[in-house]
Length: 78
Length: 379
Image 1 (tube, each protein chain N blue to C red):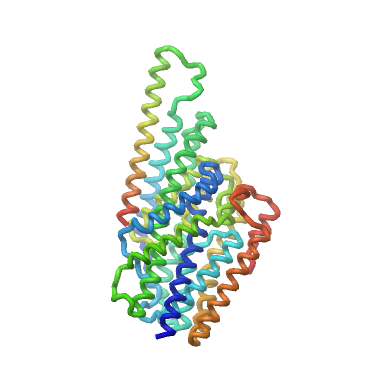
Image 2: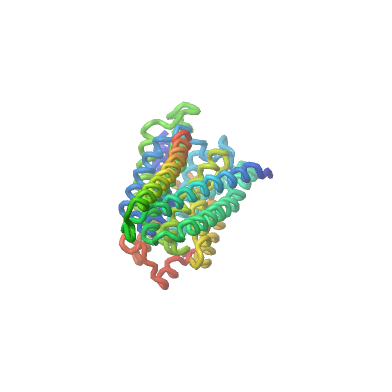
């Protein structure tokens, strides 16, 4: 009987790393998204903050998309 | 010659029927949590999963692997044994579907083949070392790995979004779920449709209809892809209910974490050549997502029943496969008898399922008592 501990550890390490990267980035994106209701917003300062928040969220979602596209290439490449 | 053609037709039809059950058994893998959290409406979810399974069947450039993957001695496998193995796998898939249990279709197929080859060609034709290495160890390890990964991912998702408005978080994660569920469905199509293509191709080669070492002809790819896609679209609503609602209460962040973990584990393992069961990975990651959220209730009774069905899958499919191989070994009449009994049993399972039907309309309801009864294994 031959247990491939290295392969097992590799599968665990890689999937843990990729999953945490994706989920953390996506959660940051969700958390960074500016509130839609706009309650308490107004003035130049919060307008700037709004833009920064939107940019952060978009960046996070794009990173997740990149991971998904990489996954897609793995699936298609077989 | 007459016998061979009759047998070949029966094998191809049985393989397609198995492919169909494989599809509807595994719709839950990709779509159960998306349906449970409302990320996708039930009928939209199964249509998406079906289309992606069909696409997946065509996408993969990998040649359909040998069906046995080294578990049985390919040189000793006859058409009758393939048929008997498929019958064993098919009937076990239908029984676990009736009980709403997400058992592994691959394990059922391997089990049926092991039983059929054991009876037909003797125990020496079964390579037990490969069985342990390719089935038993991954079966123990893969749900655990997926569970731990999903647990941590869920934990972080909730910690990071704890100051976010619940509405906004739910909307965001639901959108993410559409993507993560689609990847699971696509990966499933590239993996599982290949198995049936492999079975049919091997059957064609063994009768001399195709040259040795041939790739699956285009029509085999087409009908296998269509059978699994149709099965997926039909949707195994009983299993979707168990995985989406029965095992634990799933919210959108958990669903996203579970599907992302499942995709990562499946892709990492298939990339590193480590065989895993999609079903077991998905079940493990849903359990992990349940454990990763505080106050989420994990129903250990359901988890126990699922684990029991995993233990039974291989021996049960092997027993049916072996009995079918013994009967079908008695010539055309035997094959016809096995086919008739299998068809009757399948019709019986379907009739039993009508007593307490699970449909797209009630898939997200979990009536406590009737769910308990439905999920009792009928063995």
